[in-house]
Image 1 (cartoon, rainbow, N blue to C red):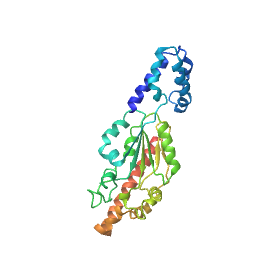
Image 2: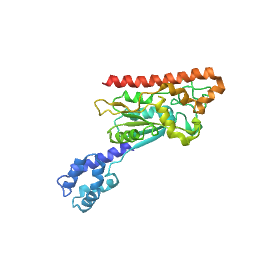
Image 3: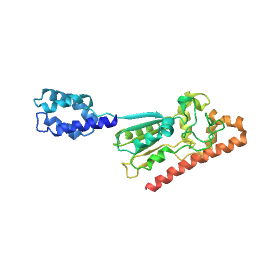
Image 4: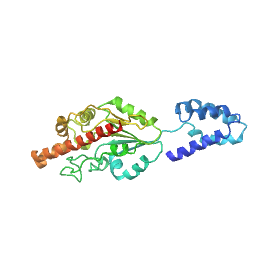
Length: 287
C-alpha cells in the first residue's frame, strides 16, 4: 500500500511539474511547495480539483484519476507481538530496513494472545504460557534495540498507563518521521492473570515501568542526541512483587516451590536489568 501510494504521489508531482505553464500553474506551484504537508494539501484540494476540471489543458485532466490521493496518506501497520517478534519478524525487518515512510504499532502482550497464550520471543523468562508450562527459560527479545542499531528507524517504547503524554509524543514523532517508524506498546492481556482483572491494566503499566519490567524511551534519528529515556531509573527492588501480581508468574510458586520460583524470578529481574543497562550504555555511546 505504501509503495502504491508513493507511485501515485510521484505521478501527481510529475503531471504538475510538466504543466507549470498551464492555466493551473499557480495552484500546482503551491501544491508542490507544500511537499508532504497534508494539512496544506487538504486546504487546497477543493480549489485544485476545481481548477483542473475547469482547465482547457487536457494534459492536466489525468489528475482527476488521483483525486482521492491528492491528500497524502498516513500508513500504519498494527499487529501483536507474536507477529512482530516471531512469525512475521522477517517481513517486519525487511520493512524497517527499507526507506518507506510507514509506521508500525506493536501491541506487546508478550504471548500469542489469539491462540490462547502461547509463549513467543516476546515472552519474558519465568512466565508460564503454552509450550512453557514450567516457565520460559530464555529472555525476552530486545526488538527495540535491534532496530535502533540501524540508525534510520524511529523507535519508541511506550506504556500508556505509565506516561500518557510520552505515548502521545511518540505517536506524533513517528507520524512526522519521513521513514520507517515502530512503536512497541506494552499491553497487559487476559493471559497474564492480573490480580483484580484487566480493569487495573493502566496501573499495571505504571508499576511495570516503575520496577523496570519495561522502559519508556524514544529514538529519533533526526536529533543530534537521538535516544531519550523517558522513565525514571527503575526500582528493581519492586520487581519480584510486580511479577507475583500476575498468575503467569505467581503459579510458579505452587508449581516448583518458592525457592526454585524465586531463582527464576531473579533471572527475569536480571534480564530486565541487563536490557536497561544496555539501553543506558547505548544512549551514552551516542553522546
